[in-house]
Length: 279
Image 1 (cartoon, rainbow, N blue to C red):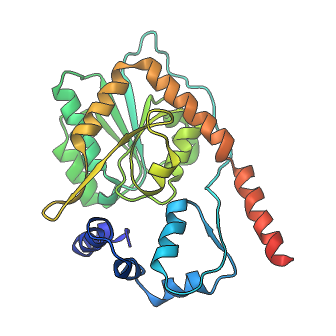
Image 2 (cartoon, rainbow, N blue to C red; image 1 turned 180 degrees about the vertical axis):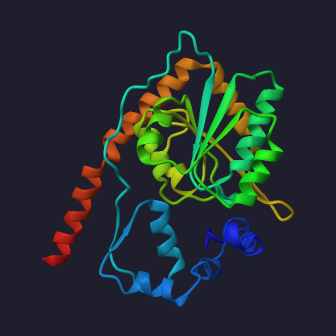
Image 3 (cartoon, rainbow, N blue to C red; image 1 turned 45 degrees about the vertical axis):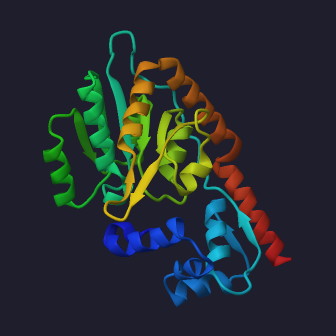
């Protein structure tokens, strides 16, 4: 249901209010949007969820008996290589955003926070944006924030995206809903210091102050769901000023990836469940 944010914000806001502001068991059942969705949960032999919050949603949102459920986080192959930017001569702080250019991914909030950072005297910041979106939306952002050092890179093949990750200092994620972000996984794999919104699977994946810095979201009947731009601004400045903290967060995120989020681990867990079902 959270995918409604982009295509039907009024319906999204109504459901968000019911789910988080005035929750009830009747609300939980309303969050399953179709009979097909309901049947996909109840008729399976086994449910595999990539996050605990996903499993909790199914358990609360579906009436009747459910099959056994397992949690298997997303995983991917290790493409890590050491960064190539020379810090002796280059004092530019490079931020990177990767993902769809859509309202639900929160890019306008990142740009607004970046403007606040610049107004507070930090002008050695560059934001590189990798991803695609509706041309009108992208053109609107480029025009509205033309005072900032922002590079729209478009949709990149992974070899090029690897170079962007390797040459960046801070990864920024401002999604308003995110089940299991491959971008968060990639940034962790490449040892980036990450600033992320504390929503859904992102909140579950990262530990604040250890593997990332988290930013809250706000909700009101008038404005709907929004990222706390002032908090995001403060977190950006915190990492811009503290190189050691950037390195520590990046190192910890990299270790988290190695311990929990490799492709081998995901594959082994999945195959184990298939073997149980076959037996």
